[in-house]
Image 1 (cartoon, rainbow, N blue to C red):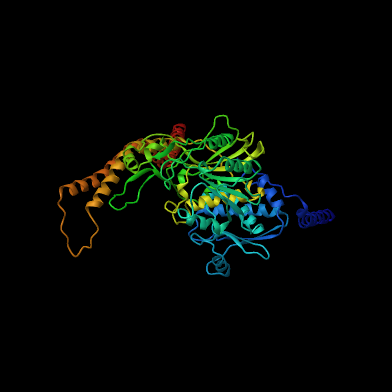
Image 2: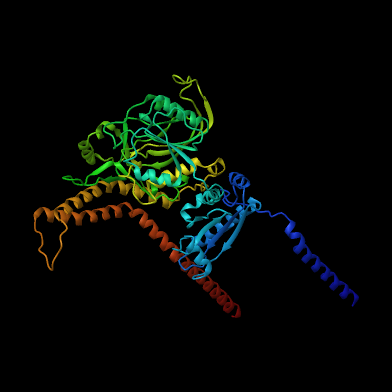
Length: 581
């Protein structure tokens, strides 16, 4: 009896000690977590921790996640949980400067009403973030997108940064060409987000209050102005430069300035001044004018999302960019700077002499010589790293300045026509957004500018992916000419069949030319389909074999196991009958 009582009291004391330990001491133990992911995606980077340690005033974050929304996919549900975990890491690293509120708004609830009031997107259920700071306006992320997951740290940090620094940055503009009339809409958009300081084209020294500098067509600027731009960059200033070998807003080629090539070489890059980029895949049609039909202009490119570096801040929420008569930027062989491409051409692109594009008639004629094969060229790039001065002895009237820098920040775009209202669409996810994203990043303080996207771990393509890529290249190579013929046929057919109002029945046009065009309009899509079927035939057979194998593997395996079990029972039965005899 005493032994049972002693054992029971011992168990009760152990239970009380266990509860006391969990209630009192467990909160004092350090929270230890291990991140086993290849790219450490669940751990805040040192730059993010440095950014959070520099916060000056507390911020409240309201994370809206309608995880049970019917339109929410399983992938988005998992992504919503990863965002929540990341925000908790932010709150922990901020040491009391961030207050996180996690809200799961139900339909027609007060939380849903608040989310709509702050402008969050409810297309697939609320998945957004609202930040507030006492005495200042709120900032929001309308919706998180799975496509922008590498930019998640920058999105969250950018919202917090805007709460801490609500004032508009000062951006300087130096232009070698008139922009008030040709790019008026862009200038108004830039002025809505920044304090735009218009500097004279003869400026020799960039003011110190300029946080980021935008330079358009530096080939038309003097050496003194180029020297001032270089010194601004070497002293830590950030620059976005637009260079164009053949701007459509001027007649003829851009004025050549040999010192500009030396300046680019000092930054570790080069751009041929007499070469212009044409692209057979991304080329677009020119607008028809009086007495002129629409023609394909190979130097005017509609760059889709696939032609962008989606791991860079400049392409944040960007879907399309239109450039025209652009050049190409490349890295010098012995360069020490980091060359990060931002905008690409397709693989059906090549560089041609600008002389062939000076005349409008020559431009139209070049529609027949679109490149079928070529290589991918870089239209815009980010350059960072050590650089030296292209003016080691200074210039006339000014002594030598800074000779080198350990870290420069420059974005070079090989086009100026993308700034014009004629090419820049009014949609918010096009040329203007690319420029705003870049200027916003360049004008930010070091704490935010150093927050870089997380590059996903590169996995080698599987056999099926490699075969799909090869099939796509084969199809594109064969279908290119057929697609061009189909586009021309459609254009000729539209010219012969003007849009008229039909009243009741209508007569059939029996003109021989129109009937021939109709036959071509029906035959060419069938030819494209046949080419695609031929190119993808091998991979389609392999995918079908894999599907059949996966579909019938388990039933066949079960049948084999059942057959073996049957044989085993039969053998034992036969052995038993033989033993009884």
